[in-house]
Amino acid sequence: MKKRYFLFHLLLLFITYLPAQTTKATKAITEILQRQENAWNNGNLDDFMLGYWQNDSLQFIGKNGPVYGYKTTLKNYKNHYSTKAAMGHFTSTILQMKPLGKKFYYVTGKWQLDRTIGNVEGYYTLLFQKINGQWVIISDHSS
Image (cartoon, helix red, strand yellow):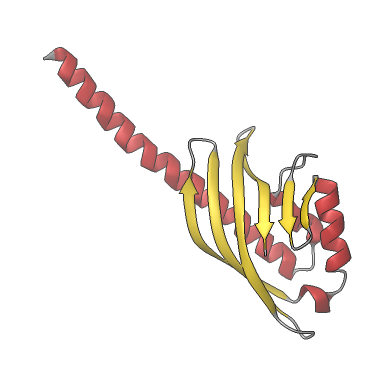
């Protein structure tokens, strides 16, 4: 009887702990994406990149295939979006957030740039990892 009582309480603790952790993670990731949107719309690509893992292993996959590294990704953003007209107004819409364990989240969303030189839009998949207590994007596939 004591064993069942203990297992019941352990299960109850796990059931209440897991959703709290999930909610905390989704809130943190949503805030990162909102800060990125704000930074972009303020014309600040350096701040936009703060959501990414500052590491040579960061992966970004775009129309030209995969590139690696935080500095390379930032450089590419600055080359492709060097003016306010090119940057336009950025909107990001999260379509799905899926936990892949305690330290990983898979996020699918839609992006849109409203620009005077022509609007563009597409979709993204992001892999977030919790590193040193912080959620960061370790892989971005945007099309």
